[in-house]
Image (cartoon, rainbow, N blue to C red; front, side):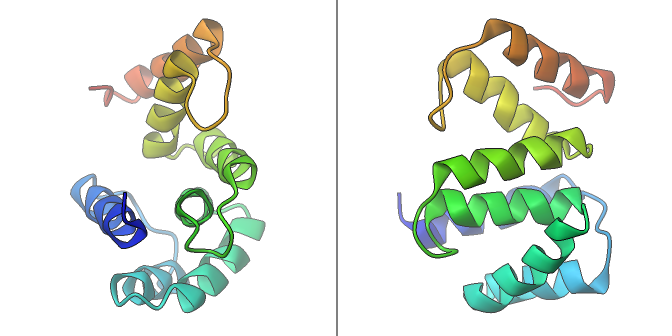
Amino acid sequence: MNNKILVGSVLSTMLFFSMPVSSDEFLNGFKAAEQHDYKVAVQKWERLAKRGDPNAQFMLGMMYHSGIAGEQDEVAAVNLYKKAAEGGNLVAQEYLAIAYKEGWFGLKVNKKQAKYWENKVRMAGDFR
């Protein structure tokens, strides 16, 4: 899949779910990504991710997953998805539920972990 299409899809998905954003810096990163200025988006989100922002962690994970943040790095992406999910990012929780169920992102199938993340999303009332 084309990386620009992937990021565009993720940006649209995040807008659709109206995820709460934590700061103007996150929104500035989001706007930069929409304009295909991925270097600026990564810089903004890296600062926020290091401070524990789950939305920035998720978006940065997407950038590493797609290779837009530099070289494609699924290990870094999964680590960021986990941090984002643990911080309450529902999309990251859904990603992990499906990833563990299907064996995506280099993860081994793990029904227990899949169920754990499915339950977290269900408790938030959002699992599809």
